Length: 95
Image: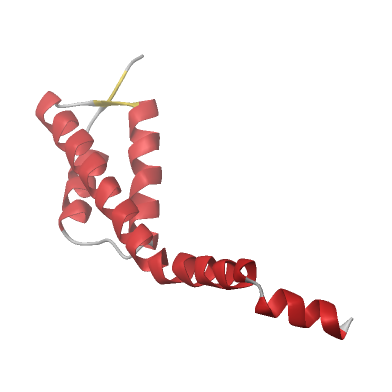
């Protein structure tokens, strides 16, 4: 058993595995930031479009609220909150 462990630890495959694991954890913050930026753009664009139109349909409202919840859980705040406050006051149009 000792020889197997030494072989695994000494192999290049193990080093690559560890390197990959470290890379995933190192990039976790970057991935979160990218997702938050994408949500920011989507919420902003959809919200402003609905505000210009003067109403919102129920499926769009549900989707934008879910996106906003996720955006906030990723640390987003500020300007998007003000857009959402305006979106939540819009009348819901019939489908």
